[in-house]
Length: 334
Image 1 (tube, rainbow, N blue to C red):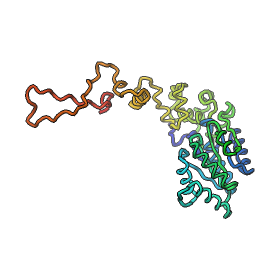
Image 2: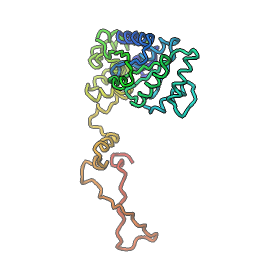
Image 3: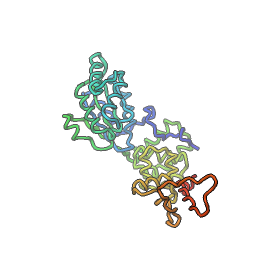
Image 4: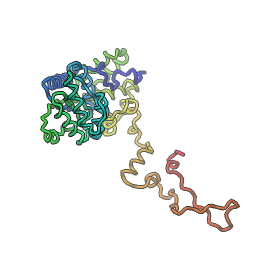
């Protein structure tokens, strides 16, 4: 049985695993030309799962020597934190005004003969607007010493760029392959992984099914092929082609998590789903956890119960109200 570690279709961004496609090679050429022609802001647009992160890693290798590169692992930062992170990555000194300090550090590096800096921002959809404005100011303050490369799945923030007087170079990445190209891509992945005859036969027999489920989108293809190799055709057949499966595929879930998706068992109820429903409806958790109102416990008075003397309660004294059990006990957890 194939394990996830030996899976030829593991969702990796290692450039060594890159398999050229028509769309990716075209995008790479356009990105390289834009950077070499002096474009200061470049936007790489492509749908989720189209391979933008892999493409950025390959581009970084291809332009090494001509450009320095800087990557941001988490773009959802405010302007000061973002600039402080950039300063630290460039071995700059922290300052009270990190935006100006960052611009000064980049400019001084260019003056000392360092190659131009390409600041690559993956998942730029998560970049807050104030942070984008700050980065555009830094770029304008440093001129050719800094290029911004924004990879996005949504629309380009045209209004913000226009207000900053920036005309970006936009490169579109097609997110789907035709069936024939997908078959060539799949075989190339198998070749790179030195897959055995059994793996190849299983994939070849399911090419039509894989295309029907993925429509040539690399991430969806990798997920479906991984499920097929790691768990067998029965598990792939069990994956329903519905919104739940599509959402799981678009997420960062592993093939094992996709294969064990709760969508395969509509009757399964999880604690997390109950909590999510309660938060969405702004209702007490008990109202969702108890299906039969007759099973609901009586309301507990908010006033504290006076302590019972050690010798015991006097005859006829009211018994203290029972303590309310934690809601998770009712769902099978104690």
